[in-house]
Amino acid sequence: MAEKTITLTDNSNGKSTELSLMGGTEGPEVMDISSLYRDMGIFTYDPGFVATASCHSSITYIDGDEGILRYRGYPIEQLARQSNFLEVAYLLLYGELPTMNQCEEFQDIIRYHTMIKETLKSFFDGFHYDAHPMGIMVGVVGSLSAFYHDSLDIHDPRHREISAHRMIAKMPTIAAASFKHNIGEPFIYPRNDLDYCANFLHMMFATPCEDYEPDPVAVKAMNLLFILHADHEQNASTSTVRLSGSSQANPFACIAAGIASLWGPAHGGANEAVLNMLQEIGDVSQIDKYLAKAKDKDDSFRLMGFGHRVYKNFDPRATIIREVCHEVLENLADNNNPLFELALRLEEVALEDDYFVERKLYPNVDFYSGIIYRALGIPNNMFTVMFAIARTVGWVAHWMEMMSDPQQRIGRPRQIYTGASERDYIPMADR
Image 1 (tube, rainbow, N blue to C red):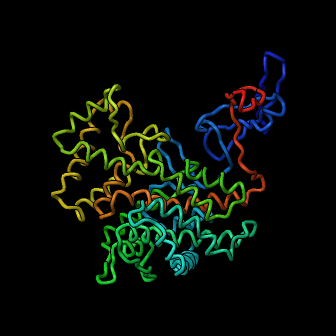
Image 2 (cartoon, rainbow, N blue to C red):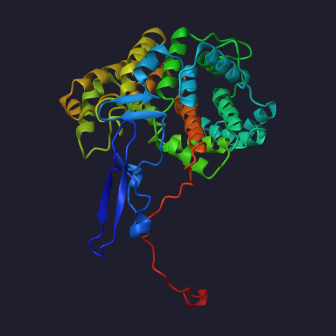
């Protein structure tokens, strides 16, 4: 099949270049503009990179118009209902679902790496007693290269794999320790007889004087949330990890950069914004008032947790998580809690409102995840930390894919310079 090309001509000077069209397994064709500056002396301008493919990747596929999300070709609906988080982690890292033996070996490896160095525990003492857990996460994860520097040769595939395993295993331990430091309780060591999600809940809520047995409904909900948040293609934090990694920074520094990006309220903080919105609405009787405010273009109020930048129809993750959300609320939440009643009623009213239906502003995954986390007893300032635990799998998968790509180059976006033209220095006495 002949290569498809597009000829681009500058009418002002007659210069032209042929740009190749590239295609993936699925999705729109992509124009290769790498020769544009060389042949024509111009750059492209794409704020937010909304129409720019930054890499080749075989990890995750999204079709926002059709509401499709697949990990390595597997629909998220199938993985969420039939798989578990560590099996999905293996899939994202290695490209195929594991056999029984591979799955057991992978689980054993992750269990082996769950503890953190005792000296690393003292690192937490340097943070203020009420430091935000995400601030602690950025600092502690960034410091891991100073504690685990035996496998930092990024050009060695085995070293990259060991670092990936360590990050997936230790992230729940670090997250739980950040929570304990924030509330002034002693750290709880991991229990390797528990599975990944149950172990995390145990480290969060057990104390030295009182053990904690994770509720199966809570474990199921956490497992589902982690699967749904494990990867989402080239989002802001994943792109940050890739850009950091392109400079050949160590993997722990790259993941710390991803955590910092995720911390932004426009990215990982969206589910926390949903809870803040519900608290502002306050009561079921105020729903009509706030829906009217959301429709008013001159009003600053926005209905958080509805609609999505990528999904123009519906968020496939929201459809899945909605079922578990209701199960969690029925089994774990205080039935007299007005916040949960408010959330469920708001969902019902918005889904029947023509304004939101016509604009396809359906509830997204952030609307439900915040409600579930609150029902599990997880405070608002830990919501983004939960996201970071799950997304670590996607980050390390993309980092490993990038580091093994022979075409990988250091990231170097260009700009439109709008500053002063050349001018001469003026001595201070003459200014």
